[in-house]
Structure formats: structure tokens, C-alpha cells
Length: 149
Image 1 (cartoon, one colour):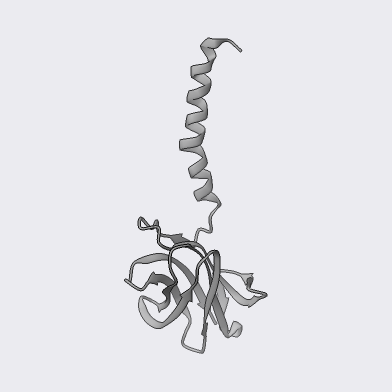
Image 2 (tube, rainbow, N blue to C red):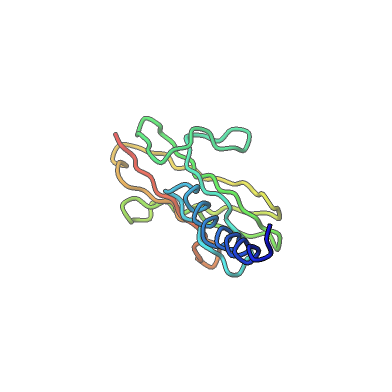
């Protein structure tokens, strides 16, 4: 390789690392879930998933569309928390109205899994959202889903 091509190669590697790869990672994420960047880095939400059940501490039948026949929907979340034990809240909203707030504990771990669930009945059809906040009400992430009859 000619030494005159080295600066061109360095620029190409920089463009791939700074421009292309971050966009690829954003594309690969679940489009219904948004994880908020946490500047304090005290607790980091790594994953938020909706599912029909949890088995062996893992989400089963992941989806963002559910039916009333499913009866119960789980919000499964994974945190990185290496600083101190904390409380977080899963807040379940229907059409923008808070329906349920569940307090969950997050221990010290690089991969702490926790989840909440909500029972669904006739009249609960529509657009839903689960927002995850810390004890200071700082949003860590959110995900949305729909419930149909």
C-alpha cells in the first residue's frame, strides 16, 4: 500500500466508526422502545421488552401488539447498575392516562433483570405505553404497544 493512501484509509475508517456504525446500531434496535441517554450513569436501562410471559427470567412471546385474550402483558427490563441499589418505576399509560405505577428494586449488577405485569380487561383496548423512571422521576426509557379486542 502506498503511503499516500494511508490518510485516505484513516478518513474512511473514521467515517465508518463515527457515521455509519451508530446509525446501524439505532436501526437494529426495537423501533417501539426508546432508551433515554442517562448522563448521570448511575443506572442504565439496557433493554425494555413487552411480552406475554416471563420464563426462567427471560421474556417469552415478545410483541408490541396484543389482544384482550392475552389477559396479561409483561414489561421486562434489564439494567446495568454498579453504584447503589435503587428503586425504579414501571408506569403503564393508556391513551396518555396513568393506569398503574409499579415500584421495582434494582440491585447491583451489570445485568439486573426485573419486570412488571398488567392485567387487561374489556375496555382496555387502545394505545398503551410503559415509561420507566428512577426514584427522581427521571425517564430512563419507554415503549409503546396496542391492545385490540
